[in-house]
Amino acid sequence: MFAPRTVSGDSPVPAEVAPLDHDVRVGADQLLALLDNTSAVIYMRDVDGRYMLVNREYEKLFGVRRVDIIGKTDHDLFPPEVADAFRTNDLQAAARGVPIQVEEVAPGPDGMRTYVTVKFPLLDAAGRSYAVCGISTDITDRKRAEDEVATLNAELEQRVRERTAELQASTNELSAFAYSVSHDLRAPLRSLHGFSQVLLDDYADQLDDAGVAHLKRLQANASRMSEIIDDLLRLSRTTRAELRRGPIDLGAVVTSIHAELQAEEPARTVELAVEGSLITVADVRLMTLALQNLLANAWKFTAGKAVATITVGRLEGPGPSVFFVRDNGAGFDPRFSTKLFEPFQRLHSASDFDGNGIGLAIVQRVIRRHGGEIWAESSPGQGATFFFTTSAGAVPAKTKDSHE
Image (cartoon, rainbow, N blue to C red; front, side, top):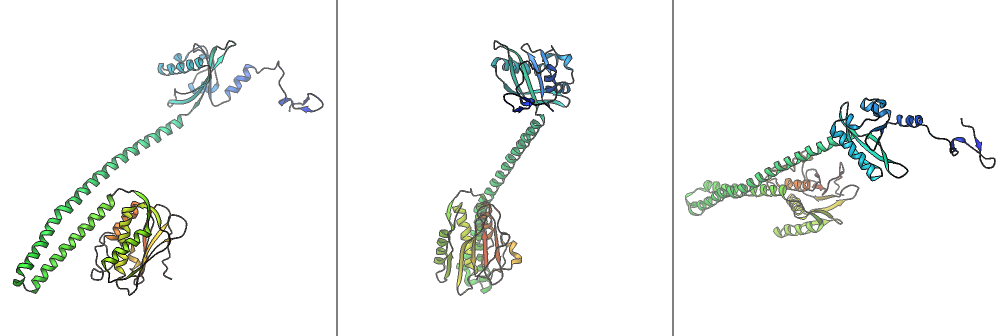
């Protein structure tokens, strides 16, 4: 415990915080003790590069004794390239007359180690540098971690480039296949349809009713194959099309599609309800295609209803916007809902409802291209509701399909 002493007046001032007397100086042993109890590597070299002082961390790191290296230079201790780098940095600090920070490497027990070093000159009374002091901190582990991250990033970028090239090759193959389907397969289908029509026109009187029925069935299947080809091409284009996002009013798009469906079947009356504002950001062309398929699906499966209704809206709640298309049509067994979005999978017989089972597969691909999700809720005879988002994010685990 330090004894207090008084300065002016009677207020005691602890001796440990009082100004030191002018004749009190820190001795060399005390200074060296301070340097020896730090984890940094500290040293001092004169302007000729000869060691004047090193601390204990320096001794431990390089396996030397300070008494043995005082007066020596880095060229006496390290490989030429390492010593040259040290000397260059010393001269730079001496020439500038101010502290500099550099990154240096030196041999260690496990290989070359990296240090971040602050070097500053010691000046005489005339302002000339007579020595350079260095304080070095080992950053080898950090540098190795950075190098590992850089290597992993480089490997990842290379894998991404390779994967991109593979995807591009697959896309090119798909484009070539689509071209082949579009041109090469249509020609024989047209021939089948054309020659069967010739037989019906020119030789119908030589055929019995069964023969005519067979030809008409042949034509119907050729037409259906042509429709399947068209659906496959649409599915392919949906997967490969470039995504261009922009503002889109889903309500306006739905109203326009409903008008087109009504014009195609004027004998039917299907009531459309658009609830609230349905503005989102999406690819206008692809989202319009998705809505065309969803509304066509609802239109088709409400055919047996005396009063058919389609409702389009948005669910309120946190997270990304959840839109829905609801109808009061035939519905489906929810046990088979996972098959809805698979190409050519149908939950109703072709005799009840026509179609090739491609429409909802196209819708799912459009939604996934946007980073969203699509799912459906229904029960037989109670209509169906299709929910979808147009961006990534958490969606409700279960939505209530309420008709009240």
